[in-house]
Length: 441
Image (tube, rainbow, N blue to C red; front, side):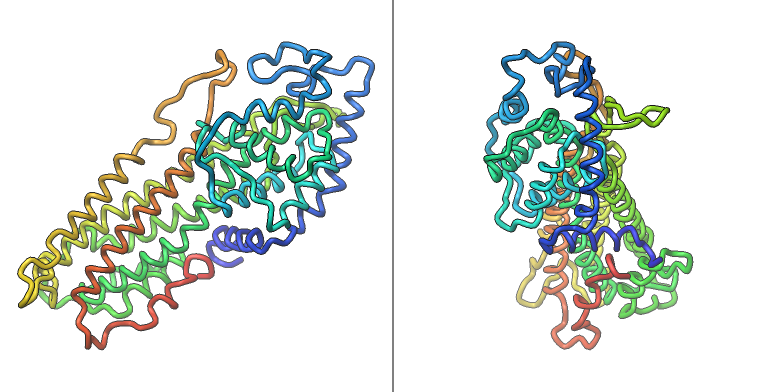
């Protein structure tokens, strides 16, 4: 298989989602969805059907209370509208599409109390370019499976106003980790630009700062090795007796590799999350192979939260090294670069630019330096006593990437300001050659 195949596979999945086509696995899952829901209907048709959360009981910590008969017919739809608390900020259209496809894929993996009729609606909407569900940006400390998911479900019902929800479908629509997964997927989709820009600025930096063969690690992952070749191919060996540059410069191979490792782990968790059932309750089987309805914790995705946190850590790491190498670049120690980037007609030069980069870094650190599971609590009178911060960390990642791009753009501007117009070592095809290294190797 190709190296870093989890990155390539997820990139292909993102391309498929953006294409607007119905994904093949969604079509293939319909028969299984029908069989599972029929098993659920058979269970509910028994003389004494069991109490099932969200089907014939009230939600949340009121699970022990039976559904009042006068509310039974409207309960599934009322549940959705009840959870659409007022919100004012919503995700962009691409993130909303990722969230919808995450729901379709996790439902196709099985277990959800979704009938084939409702499943067909979800799949058809996945190919509808005009379907733009309104989903809040926040309003969740975990997977987004209450308020944001209810907004999404309301958009689904608005697109099919004649559909009458069947037993269990209201709860099945708003439950699951799909909002978290889709929001994280949107963050991953932005990583290619960050990776490519980082390689381009590093290449420009190393055109003036010597890089020796220690930058090439033979045992490095192939895509990392290719990236290191790209950033160092126009550099030169240091002259004998040269003072060594700061650690932030010498450790470029290590920090680049660490960034890649975090991206690969993030991709691996996203692929796993997209292929697993995520619902509560869920349809399962007893040890004797009989269908049953089971309580489930699959609506949380802690591994995905942890993987997202690792990418955030790596972005914070890169921001630190970028600010330090900007300062070194303008320190007067780099051949051909005047201190502070000054010139005959500009005695001040770029003295303030590294400070602006440092301000951006400190802003990013203040907002995003807390560990994912540094604290916790409980709600619903103790019934809900674990959550993943999934939507929060996914949004933090997007914010971190915005700030990282700001810092990279500052470095690009510094490099452009001091670059000699006639430099024969300036690469004219750096961007096109750097692009794609993350996904295609």
